[in-house]
Image 1 (cartoon, rainbow, N blue to C red):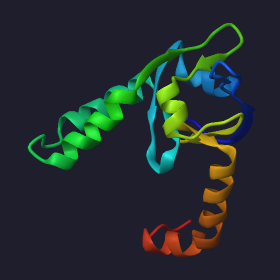
Image 2: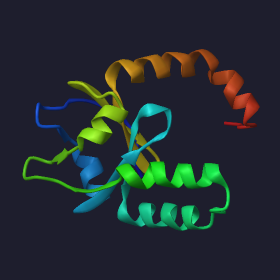
Image 3: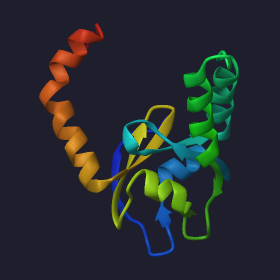
Length: 142
């Protein structure tokens, strides 16, 4: 399970340290692709395979399905760690998430996300302001 929030920096070569406890859950190879809300999403191979199965069930006769699937797969990259626990993020993914030097790696149960630090702060401020209303809307009871 992925949880927690970790501030890290991306070096000039597009390398990012993934938190050690995430590395243990990911294994030697994993997938990074575009995520929702202009962040990146990283999946252990087992979770990626489940996502692939769900995507394969979508009706390809619908234009938005084709666009969504293309968007997910076209930027996806199989990743592995170097000796320092870093992963190299492709320029396509760096540009999509507008990642600069400062970023945040966030655990989200079955996967993790990589956010630009400013975008993450903005998203969290908005989430905090609407937290109770969103919980009520999705009918979630603690």
